[in-house]
Length: 164
Image (cartoon, rainbow, N blue to C red; front, side, top):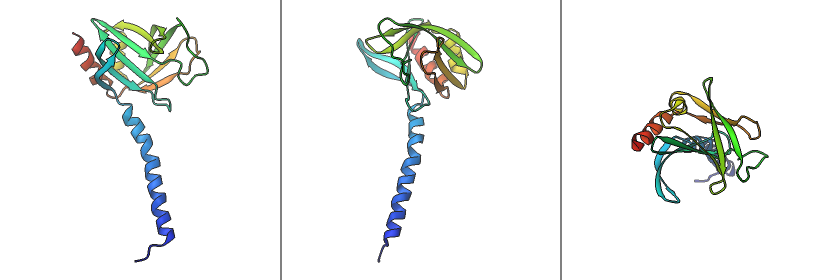
């Protein structure tokens, strides 16, 4: 049985096409909302996280301590500006026409901006009920990021339930 060079080339091209179109699907799957234990400087901590829908896949993480929801977010990734020192930012969380402003502080140790909101407050409720989330600093220094909120309700509920 002879296999022509053209058939081999066709099979290789089809294989490359399948791989090429499969990677975006895998990237989207990797940005699902997840709640699991993650290592922190003080040991394992229950964390809910996802990543942005753009190429940077910027992580967005939530942890709870008592009745406080800690938000960790890399505001500067993908932007020309870089975060430094004790920089503070007013960060807008926008979903389905609703906006919550959270004051956040740059943490050099993690290189993320951190902010705190009430565990059962308006931001947590908005994250559980919306379809998409845009995060941007109100000064417009950093590039906005967009996140899917599909699956956020169950993931955040698991986090909140563990905190009480």
